[in-house]
Structures are given as structure tokens and as C-alpha cells.
Length: 263
Image (cartoon, rainbow, N blue to C red):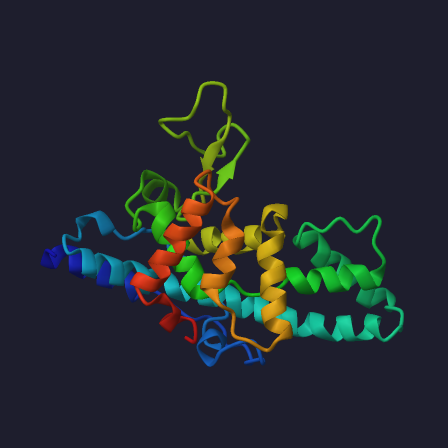
């Protein structure tokens, strides 16, 4: 790698700033507690300029890891608070007005239709949704979807997870978009915004309900979140279906990404 490119990349990497320190919870690692908020940056590193494949991979994972951990820390904090609400409603005690307002606001954020649900059903469904996505799973998907940060959508739109949008002008039009299709690849203002949207997508979209069920079973059994097992629930993320799941699992194994899950 050229010295100038390395210097530029290192300059970008050192701009990461931890703005607040959140208290660690039972589901938040110490490293996540130090990364409860990461200052977004507007300059995406030029990974295409890195000639060494090994160095490119390492720099890509190092670059992205803190952003995933930051959002996971925020989610772990919310989940810890939600736990008390689940305990209240499961004990048969009704929510106060303030408690119900909080739970409904959270339901709106997590795209949960509450119109036909009891407070108990709302709280327990939210507890399935408000949870972390393993760092290893997010990194593997990001590498796959963004071609290690070199895709046009990553470079021009901070989109590292291939997320689509459907309003004209909301993103970048794929060059090979089929005739009659209207989707665009969404543009984000920052990497953190892209990461947050990806995790929210995993936690809310009906297509990933099975992944959330698998995650809940791991929690019920007091097992660490297993990214290889959770990847099975990603069959709808790509038109490649089971082949996509295999690709993600192989990326996790080949790059020893599970070593990054404990922060």
C-alpha cells in the first residue's frame, strides 16, 4: 500500500471519537459501553487504493467494527430498560400512563403495529426485536454487500449493506436495474446512519422474523449469540437465497470474525 494512502486511511481512523460512556449491562460488553455513541464521519476511506488483500480486509473490519459496537451498545441499554417493562406486564400489573407511552414510542421505532395487541403482547414482541446483531454477522454482510467498501454505493452513498429505497431520488440508481423497476440503493449521510439502519432492518422486517426467533432461543438458553446460526435466517436478504447464507457464513469463518464478537 502506498504511504500516502495508508496515511490518509489512518487519519480517517483516528477521527473516531467516543462521546459518552454508557453503564455496562449484562448484555453490553465493556468495549460496547465505551462506544455508546461514535461521532459520524463524512469521508469514506479509499479501500480500493489498498493493494494488499489482507491489509484491505483488516482495515475494512477495523473501520466498521466500532460503528456496529456503538449501535449494539445503545440497543443493549434500551433492552435492559425494556426488561423491566416485560417483567411488569408479565406479572399481571397494568402499565402506568407514562410506562405505556414509553412502550408505544418504542413500538413505533421498531415498526410494530400495536392496534390489535395487548400491552403484554407488545412488550414481549419488542423483547424479540430490541436486541443486538453480532459484530461478526454485520461485518460479514458488509464485506459481501459493499465488496469490501469499494462499491459505488459504499463510496458515493455510505451504503455498506445494500439497502434499497423506493422514492425517486432517495438513493443511487443501479446501473443494471431491470426495466420497470423503481428501487434505488439508499444514500446515507454517514456510516453510523447506514449501520443503524441495517440493524433496525434486521430487527424489524418480517423477512427476518426467523432470525429473531433463533436469537431469542439463544438468549433463553443463556448461550452467546452465534452468528453462524443466525445467518440461517438471512435467506431473504438477497435474491441468492441459500447461496447468500453460505457466503456470509464462509466470510465469518475464513476471517475468524467471531473473535470480534466479545469486543
